[in-house]
Amino acid sequence: MTERTRFDLSTADVPTAWFNIMPDLASVTTPLPPLHPGTLQPVTPDLLAPIFPEALIKQEMSTEQWIDIPGPVIDIYRLWRPTPLQRATRLEQALSTPAHIYFKYEGTSPAGSHKPNTAVAQAYYNKEAGVRRLATETGAGQWGSALAMACRFFDLDCLVYMVRASYDQKPYRRIFMETFGAKVIPSPSETTQAGGTVLEQHPDSTGSLGIAISEAIEVGAGSADTNYSIGSCLAHVLLHQTVIGLEAQKQMELAEERPDVVIGCVGGGSNFAGLAYAFMAGKLRGETPDMRFLATEPAACPTLTKGRFAYDFGDTAKLTPLLPMYTLGHDFVPAPVHAGGLRYHGDASSLSLLVRDGYMEAAAYTQNEVFEAAVLFAHTEGIVPAPESAHAIRGAMNEAVAAREAGEERVILLGLSGHGNFDMQAYDDYLNGRLPEVEFDPADEETALASLPEVPIGA
Ligand SMILES: *Cc1c(COP(=O)(O)O)cnc(C)c1O
Image (cartoon, helix red, strand yellow):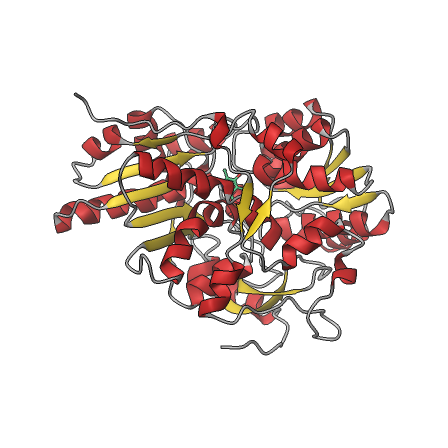
């Protein structure tokens, strides 16, 4: 009999609670609180109340291990969850590796990525709190697409600030959002002070996630009927994504294997945390001390591999609290590489702590390394991956080759966060040799890191 490659669950297996890593993290290190930039005191719930509903603020600060998923959210998850977990035997053969490569595929969601897992939850809690409209930012358009859909499901208006570079390059993502009734504005824009200030200095600015976040927060904080919604980085977002790893744990049990290494791509950290944290708990508890975790990122925006662990703002206009994280500086504007979802200067606090303390490794790859892996994945497994997800594939392929060289039957679990069906321009550029090998410029590093606030951080 040929080897089994699919490990499907039924809709009855959709998780009914999210998994919170904080109790386990607190058992191995001291979690650092976000700080008020003026007083440098830990942020209190009232500071966040103008932009987030109470339920999400509670989750942001929760130390409970499990948090129940509301019924209406589970009902919507069941439209596409559980997502597939497959073994990539054809990729293994192409690499002549004894490694077993499994991938957990989030591209089967309606928006094509993992992002609806949190968008639906956030829209639900805002609706419950009586909010009428959500404002947000989007880079590549994946997050905006997910939130546009979620807002439609809960009858909320949706306002999306889309990074100008993507707005111009990716009209189909914009139209996808508009199909669900969202209003999409290219960022920087004249509709906000934050955007206006940038345009005054740089009229041709192609924008960045940091700028778009400033615009969306300004709107969310400035109008009573509007809240702000964020697609990554914060603890409540990572929490909602843990459905990925909880399903993957069951599916790996069906496969009767245990991952030796779990790999994902990191923009702000949500899809990788979502996949990894249920497994990471075992490592932090000393049950699976040898299990490895590898976070992958673009060489053009190498937050974890070249950034500094420091308190920094999450946005360009310094509207957010100070967050303890690996950062390239809130003024850093990464080169416009095609993995738009990975072009963010910072990363989630919990994930940053895990990297700092050696529980998680990190690696950065250039665009051509990443697309080479993406195309081999398409040729063998038939899925054209999102450029973001292709970073994880690159990491997995490197592990599989290392396993071959070491003659080891390593079990690799990789997070395939989305499909690349809206990213054809990127593939066209790669196939025609037009992808520049943009690396991080150490000169940029100095200027960007110079913008870091001087706030001491515990070691
Ligand atoms: C947004 C996005 C990412 C990066 O965001 P994380 O919060 O780090 O997961 C990765 N992959 C895809 C497909 C995305 O849309």
